[in-house]
Length: 530
Image (cartoon, rainbow, N blue to C red; front, side, top):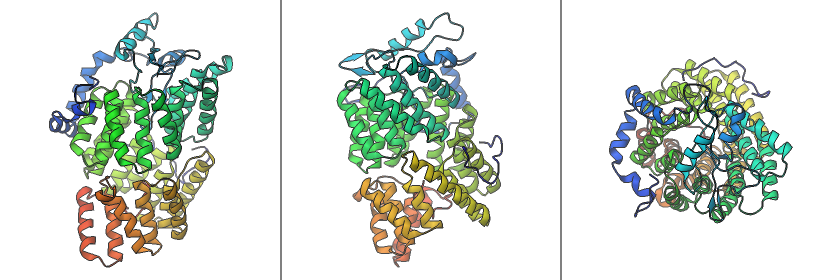
């Protein structure tokens, strides 16, 4: 963990058509939604095997030997990758100073190498071009940590030998962002900014790859105003490029602009309906309370998953949705499937720890959390582990873990990452609530999203300002005030605030609602770090 260690070592191996019809790409999700959602929810081993076997014929070019992105071939396979907030590396063009993506009306695609053992990568280039047409290749290819490391090494060598290759700099910057996301190595983020700005200096116009990279970097840092600026520039330069719309979703969400989220999702699905786009759609649908649509979108995305890492990312998202709707057994199955597909999937291990702790298997939950932190340092996950220790009466272990949280927040801040939500939650429940209010007020002024509203309301409540706290809790939970996200934590916080104000009937009603959303919720007193 780069010097930040927990007091116990991690236990090894915790269980862990484009839609451009007359009614637009969003229309396709409304066909047979219930059937597809049921198929996903009933995603037992048999169904998973069926879609996995069914797609095997389509992806034999990476099965049966070393994956095609290994070694020297990675430069051709993943050139022009753009990091999305969901952890997807999106293939786009490479080549010395060539157009990135779909610029000035011209789309050029550099493909992946051929199947293992093929004499050349020409056939795969032809296949990729055939699938992408004249537009941007947005295949939603997600790769593992080792493969990102290979890509970084290859592009670092490339820019040393060809320092004026703007496309190589853009790929390198995007790869740094992805490596930071997957490994928790936040020191990669300043390197990413340097590389992406170098690309933009070399090619200030028509450089959509670098603009998308800067948007992804800002989203990773939780700097949503900057993400909005970069994302809107990317869309203005390349309006047909779906990746830019996907990245803007995070920016709009972080700023609390939910009408813009809805409109951007429609444009995204009009531009592309591949598995990565469907995964983004599932996130938005879930936040809007459209569970059937979210499940159906994930079912479609899973059916088209093409790499183990992509498969794992989709299982993780399915597990998170199952957990949020109060189905721990189903969530556990999805998280376990994710770790089998990608043993380095830290999000899956943390999700499994959350489920284990909530269902009384606390010792196993501790091990799963420690395994997640061993794979990737995360202030949020470290805080959850500390709160689990506290719930078990392990006061010293909890205090030490909170120290780990503070150190991780400090390191993140040095790399430009905004961890105000985690710090606010830590101070509100385990430190100085007044400091939490101060930190979160500043965050609200800068980017007033629902997560911040919930966290600030809870911090105000913990500091004794219950009436003002209720105003923010209402913002986070009342659809009329923009509270579109159906969150058990948000509703529980509102219930506790109302109880402190003597609003007994309303408090009881909202507590019952929170338990309907997720009856297994544990540690809901933590303010908004999730």
